[in-house]
Length: 160
Image 1 (cartoon, rainbow, N blue to C red):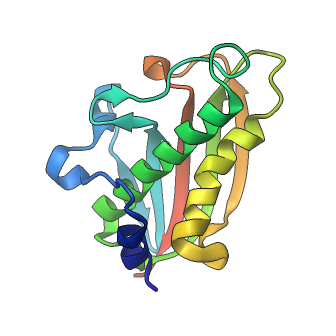
Image 2 (tube, helix red, strand yellow):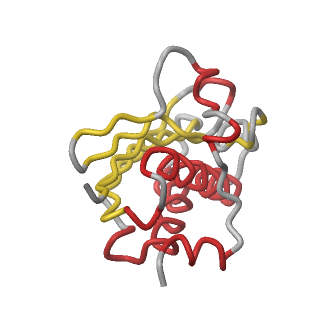
């Protein structure tokens, strides 16, 4: 089954950034993506629906690991929307190359990797393990724009 068909059957709420506009414009001077050959570099994506941030706070204080996982998953849906905006279809994805993830957390919170799995698990569900599981790094940080608790920057290999 193709990723597009699977996403439909899963009932995923993937945003249409062509219709609604990429929300990242609210975060300063940048473009949503840049493509070099078969590599697609997506700007930062967060857990946001329209202009509403869905998960705010700090892991280890007022956000649980399970809530952080859901924030990462919501962020993944926005990444899928970003891929569609850039190349038209999820079916054009050859592989998730890597993600760089940021988790707002207390200094003693050590489960940042469990939060990022919300993103990675979604990609594996949509693209399969071979195409959907890429390299990953997760960094605990003190703050992100708008109070979001999770942000990712993704590199995706796409068909030419």
